[in-house]
Length: 427
Image (cartoon, rainbow, N blue to C red):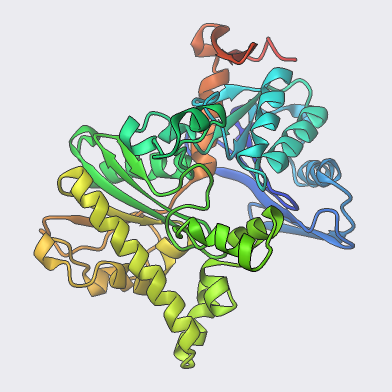
């Protein structure tokens, strides 16, 4: 693979950077890695390229320093990103609000708009912007594309995306269901159609993206009709450190009776709830070890987790008018046979069954885990958000698009430019 065929994908968190350099056509990964503990006393980088793994432990002052270290390691391992170039850089951005709902060529105006959306995703968008700004400085001549977690769910039916609160207040503060993990849900639902050799337009699907963050979606004919996350990634399923659905009256109760302020409530709901809040741990492997040791709190956490999965499955089966495929993906969804079995236990009357041998097989590929001939297909499909982002970025900057084609959308009084370019119209 030459660098000219590759796309660099960057997922910038508050104190970390995940990245992959890959061929969007074949999915082959030339290199990947993780920068951790940015801004702490001692940071760390692990970079994998072929059979070679490079590890560094040293202070990493900020994201730009972290990316510079990554670029240096790339050059050492045979991929000089700054010298030889790459086709494009694709950035994962969590919240696109009402403004962004397709892969978008990054300009100064786009960065400004993403920053404004930080009120809707205060734990995510600021870090995404930091990664974008740092990469633009290090690769000033390379087209860069933002791919939004919310984009797939932008066109949810009005009844599914609308909260039943004062309509004027909702409109003034951009309050609606946005949904997240959209890149994963779109990729996985497409792979389901391939695995089943079915026209996606004929499928009614429920997809469970179960990682430290967790979400569910109902997809009919390739288009989402509902999803569990809402205005923010807090709503919906029980997650590693987020509790998902709660009575909103709990917030007022904590303000009045415990004198919590907004910051403390955000900390509670984002970082100290969910599996961690109930059991003290948020890693599912550790949770299972506690359950095996007879820990009652861990068992309750697991039971609450499964209860919420089944509630959403039932709701989405009704919304879809039946289901053809149920799919598990992401860290827990792909690796926990027990979660898959328990989430679907006792549903044979609905045509939903899990074959124990298939479910417990060590196979890591996309596969069926329902019995042969079962009315409802149950699958495990590994997600690949990096590949999806790389393909989206390539599509935006592909020379086959015939040069630059701009689409303008109004956001307030500022015009945001969505461009498809061949790389010649960069800031």
